[in-house]
Image (cartoon, rainbow, N blue to C red; front, side, top):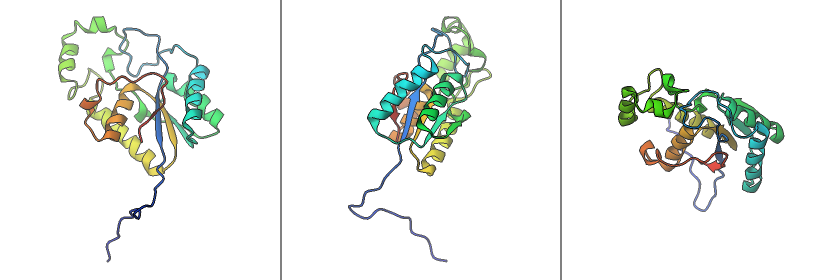
Length: 195
């Protein structure tokens, strides 16, 4: 049996690569609260958030063929509106959820600061999981799984998601560890190309 040669572009040939765009949800109305995967209200309506994304997509010029969203209202509402306006399929996917903070979700950070388990997690966040939550490696694995699926589809996609997910996608796109992007700001409602 003959080995199959991998396809490679010829010298001078251009290859079209479908873009993957991501957007963090609108700002939330829970200052100082650890919210992770809680369904929390946003400062903008779903329509206003979708309009902000549509404006950026128009400037970008990418013809989106699919809208992805996490299952949480802060992303799903605007994503539904976006898919409706663009006339493309909408896919809700739990792999696009923020890191699960378990028992700490809904608690104030000032309260958590006095919790020895929280202090330990702050020192060991790369390996440890919050009580009832998930480890960083679990977030990275599920986001990588989603990214692999989207890349294999070769379609222009936009995903409404969360800061932790976007940081993982940044790290993957740059070929660096999560540590290199962990402190980077992820602005709400800012369209970002991660491929």
